[in-house]
Length: 277
Image (cartoon, rainbow, N blue to C red; front, side):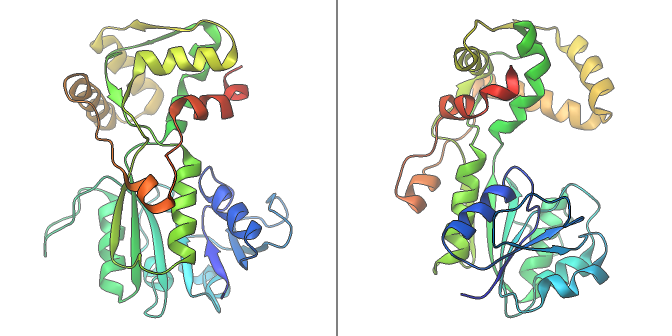
């Protein structure tokens, strides 16, 4: 098999993609900013590159027919996407739960913008639309250590996915046929409330942790100070409120593609227990 290029190769998902491909004996090239500081599995080729600087991508893409693309929330650089999505390549792009754009419809997120660029490139593509990562609950770590998580909407039921399941689906799409032109919506196996997530994390670390409802306006002020983006905070709060009445969707995509159940939030909490201690 030709070399597969993995971007975000030292990240939460990309790191698992790299290690899984290497374990299968697939030639892997990891795009990193500093090869000397990148801790990569034996045999993985590290190459310097920057997605925001298209001129740095030529060496990384040489001889590559398949790419795992993850865009790190930076402004989209169309020339980089065009370079990655060459006409003879298959690009597996880690996106999110976005709608397909109609012709001429403006993108409302950078994920939609990148999806459109890839579609228009002539490359074969697979979009992994992960609804939300279980790793986002690592943002609670400081409060978990204090024994109480104070936020609104404890009854919001989320279908968070383990990052290893995303990586496993990516590896499947990169190493087998039949995934071109597919947009896969990825979720965990069940929708679990915020309150229950906190309790499960407590079980994983061996002590009681509880949820305490915080007034929405207090949370809005605190989260805006922490995240620095009032629009994003408002969107998150609206989503959480909605998930109290209507739990987040659960799909069968992971078991259908991998032939096994998706990892549970409890298994994720056990895997990350040390991050909360």
